[in-house]
Length: 316
Image (cartoon, rainbow, N blue to C red):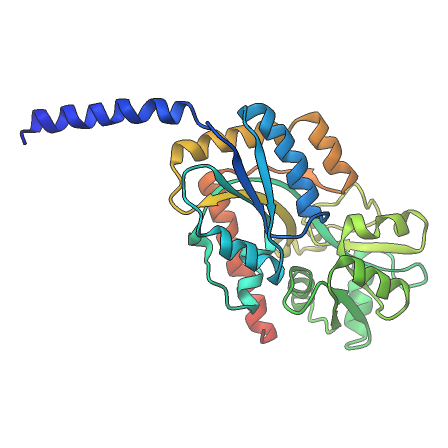
């Protein structure tokens, strides 16, 4: 075949392919959520899916696949075809934390980053009579009493434990980690006096902060959090590089067409910044945060590497 014939063939193929891409999406998109119905990631993803349906002009079918801290859903999703009709709505833990403590079938390279959607800090809270109120006082109290205080978290090697230990290691603090099945279980044991410190999501403990039963001296974000005006962000404590957040994102299967990635990322960004979604996030103590494409991939890798160091230091 001559160069001229080859060139004509390439152009023809491009012309045939172009309309198909321009018409995307033509049918229902399946959105896999690696958690059961009713949780934070599920409710956030379902709310976002309604906005995406409007803007994409197609329906979105939600599939909940819970288990293994999100690893079961992630392992199942990685088998999906990279055609744009299978998307993955997750929080960061199944990708950056769970692989540190479990053998999983996937890696970061098993997915195509599209866009993050929202984020929030974790928080460390104590009872009203705890002998510290500010973040600085709180860390000083723990440092002065190694091994005295217990803190609840979302499981051995969970994101909350690693977030706390990143802070504690920097200050040479020894606190006793007590694992539970999630923030709700942690809260009940904290309120019942079985652990000294609540470690978990802000939305779970916020009602008890508002009644004065608890106070939260510290959040795991670099910046302060408006929902907890009494809590210190890590930047104010000289620990800004120890930030660990709970954040959510939409991913695709490996090798998803870059043009589809760009189209979806733009629609996700518009939907996340829709006033109704911003208001919804505020009720959960979350804020919009859109990081797209390669930049999202870099964020995942950076967090994975940082948490790997903490996990290694803890012997997990």
